[in-house]
Image 1 (cartoon, helix red, strand yellow):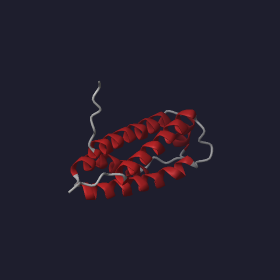
Image 2 (cartoon, helix red, strand yellow):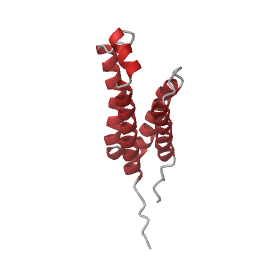
Image 3 (cartoon, rainbow, N blue to C red):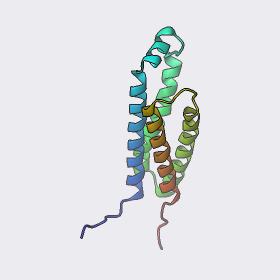
Length: 133
């Protein structure tokens, strides 16, 4: 028989944040090569200035920190930090889902996966087992 090893919640959460970051990364990379996006940048319609890029850096720094914090924080704090960060990123994701004209298959696919992984982060943090005794 195969042994089904129970995985620590901290490792699950950290792995979910890693996977989520890959979805964010590939979605952004693929989008940056789209002709319509390149044309918007070249025409000045979409400004890739310091303010925009700094905001994007902050937005992506938090999930990157969550990869480490999910492993390092004590359970009680860890649980709430993951729940709050997950809810915040769900709040960031909803407007992105509602962008008119974003019907590219890759984009919709990644957005669905991002929603699923954010939901899994919040779910696993919410269901964190209490220590017995």
